[in-house]
Image 1 (cartoon, rainbow, N blue to C red):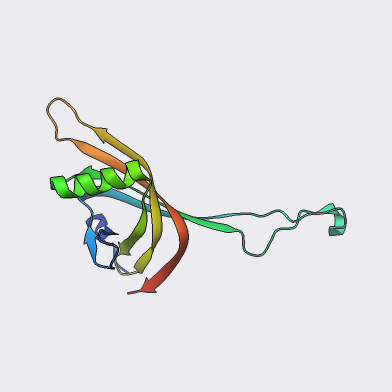
Image 2: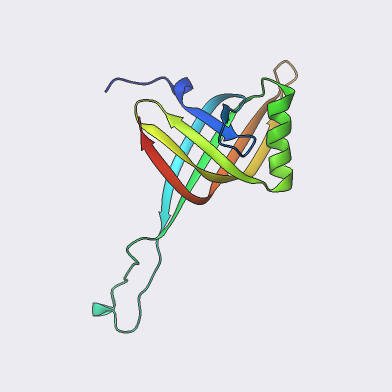
Amino acid sequence: MSAQKGKDMLLKLDGDGLGSFVTVAGLRAKTLAFNTESVDITDAESQGQWRELLACGVKTARVSGSGIFKDQSSDSTVRDYFFNGTIRNWQIIIPDFGSVEGLFQILGFEYAGGHNNELSFELTLESAGSLTFSAL
């Protein structure tokens, strides 16, 4: 497998709740991280008093990105979702790998801008339900 362009990783939002995904703004940097939190089920009868873990712990996914808004509409939608605590379907396209889709909530939203630069933003999403993976 050859190297892929980072710009080809897309973050899409189901803006109308009907399954029509649109790319969110001009994200210049994106990260998708999967985690599993262990669930300790150790008790007094655990063999040799070794810790025991539940076979499937609590799974989470975190998406973060930074970039610029291309239009006032995408800025407004993301801002409204943050302030209203909206949980909505998002889709992350990973080139030559697949896509991850499911419910996410915006947990972090920051604006930044330098005197001679454009207004930029940073966005952090946390999974809010089960996710599906589809291979490309």
